Image (cartoon, rainbow over all chains, first blue to last red; front, side, top):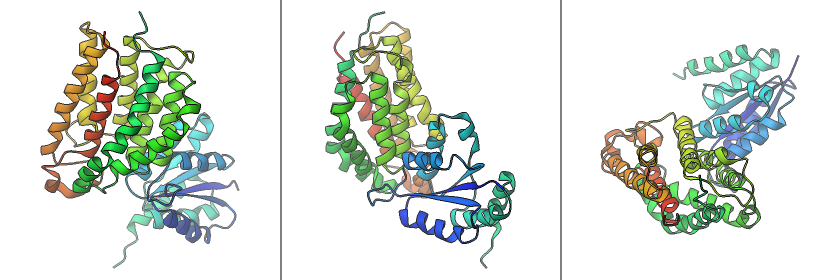
Length: 133
Length: 216
């Protein structure tokens, strides 16, 4: 089974690292995670260059799924994907329309068992139906 | 057609943007504290400090590469939505003249094409148009005015002057808008009465592009 790449894009470095830690417990060796959180100098924010570097590091994965929190995390992710020069690598990238923590967690569980990108995205999407009361 | 805007002009614009954002960062942040997360000015100033620290090594590149490097620094360091928006503006600005040599300037036609490319990416990136209390309320009327004046035969400085005026009118129009994009959309009617910080900063940025142009 081919590996799936997952990038956790958050304004907070701690959130990105924490989601990687949480979701990677579920996925074994089949998912390669990259945290792309914060501005690199301790402030809250996102960086398209950090996301781009993560995409390039995951170039060997079959697909690359990006999970984002708010506002500029989506803008930075879209900008990073636009900046990918290689057409094949760009085509591997998908911004997942799902809640960050729950979506990445559900996606990681699916990706542990399957490298079918549509199945992983669909599982991540189901995370929005996780009711809490 | 003659190259009316020299390479030095494009370097000077960047050199002037650096102290400008330091001077104005508190004003933009104050605007942002009314309707956003109070970081617009501060974030941009951190991005331009990164630009300042590299400008000497970049300014011997051609216009397209110089502006691409500026854009990348802003993408990397700004942090908020202004990062991808301003960053993409500068990355795309030089694309129409990317084949030029390091000392070459640009023609009036090329400058209009550059502004067109840079402003188009902001619309695309923000999935936004006018009337949504964003920087597009400044940039789109400014671009329309620039194109119209250029098409009518104005020299580039006159045309850019009209663009700046149209941009300022667009900025003023954001005061009475309800926001439908970004964090301000959560405020609904409470955003009314405040200028949009992105519209305000881009209006002043365009003015620097104008003021640095040599008289025709």
